[in-house]
Image (cartoon, rainbow, N blue to C red; front, side):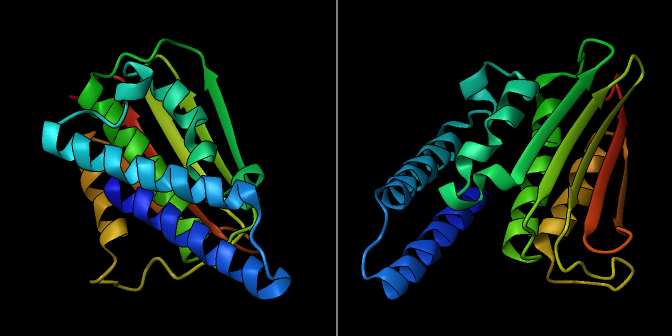
Length: 190
């Protein structure tokens, strides 16, 4: 969505600024990323206006959309995002439910890079005959999920989307360092 595109743009500009301060110049790939992030933000605006699905570019294919997530990140951190998909069954969720899963993954990834200072993030999607599991794990600074965060709109969005999926959301600290965001929902959600 637009918020994620703008977050990517913010991260890209911050990276270019650090490069310019350190080296006196910015790398071409970083400037190209910013240009792409601006294009993505403009497309997100168009999607909002036209009501298009965030999975539109992949013809509704959630797996393909998840594999495209690294390209939405600044070049310097793309390799830090791992996408792992294992399907024992076909994904049978209707498009609006697939969109919710995609946005949960996208929001959790953006939160990990933006707030947790994560250096590695893994997005795992498991599709089973009756259950779908989406897990996003990072090695960032973490936080205490039991502490109320009234201004944490991203976390609220995760909960609302999980409810729409008739699923269960678990956010917990990982042993050692980082956070795990897990959403499990029935294949028949919707």
